[in-house]
Image 1 (cartoon, helix red, strand yellow):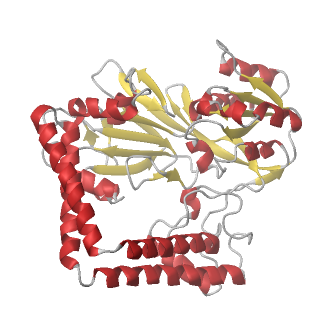
Image 2 (cartoon, helix red, strand yellow):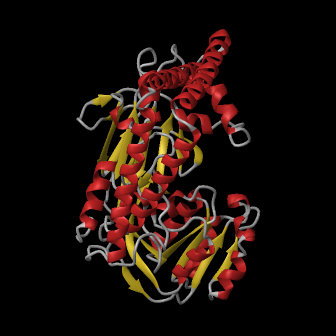
Image 3 (spheres, one colour):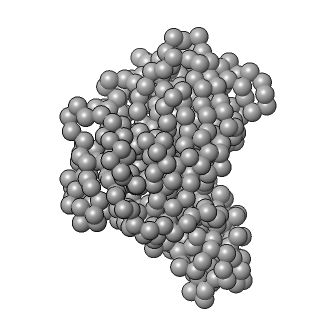
Length: 460
């Protein structure tokens, strides 16, 4: 019932947020609710006479998850045996599902859920997004776009960004071998640029955004990197790279926060612990999965200690170790540790902090189950809170840190700060909103919002 994750310019209706929903949105809300109920009824009917096979499927799934995790964090004979058990459990899961539910029934449920999600996305529009205090601004007078030609597998060339920028009166600056990106941005500012932009990954976005912050210039994000998490939370369509250039014309501008680790700006997050240690490996970029599998036994094996990461928790007590710490520029809506989620807002003047601590002997299965269910917040070793400043200490001389996807090694203590409202971000007039801003936090809240729209009231 949740709206689709990517929310672009055509998502939902064009009704102003908070206004009385149009007739088409009310029809869509009714259709979304009916399709969801129909999917639930179809599942109940399909499973009514096959509860035994359903129980077998659930047991097989749990066994596959636990055996799979054991295979990842052990070596030698234990890994081999656990791998065999996981494979057999997966085979059993497939057999049980096919006995319990026919392929036609699975397709029917999938189609109904897809229809419900699409209708809900249209019905809710952007009603759930709060006021982001955007102001309409005129076109850039001297817009400059810096470009990393290697980022995102060569998106700058693939999308013809140099010609597209020139067509809009924006001066392109293509990064060359040995060039200093920050110095190029500073030079553009000295030469009179009033709007700076960056076409590249999130690490490069942070560097140029910092220059824009220091000179109080407008900033434009062009999603020409690999994952483009920053662009996603700005409401940009990551698949339409060229459309982001419209922010150099008449655009919406608002102030958002940046975050600081030491003297380094980041736009998304900094991670420590398991993930940061794995990505430090020289082999990681060439073979991500195999490198992670090889390293996990030394990081999360039953005989391995936790990471020496000391910090003050949300209740004011001293924490002496953790397996993962994520510090973000504003709070993420986290359902799973992997992927990190998205942010509802980037202007609340806080850091989001999430920490996971695992008891190797007792907690692994519970953590994996919570992760698989998308409810990591229910794992007892999980904590999250917000704070304007955060400090991590350690006895290690250097700590592995992943900052906006870049692998760094930094000496402790690590001091994080939020910098509220320091960046003037420009987005196209028809840009969407962050998925977390327009997507209900739960199916129950989604149903409530749809009922509001069906009754002719704003979703929020």
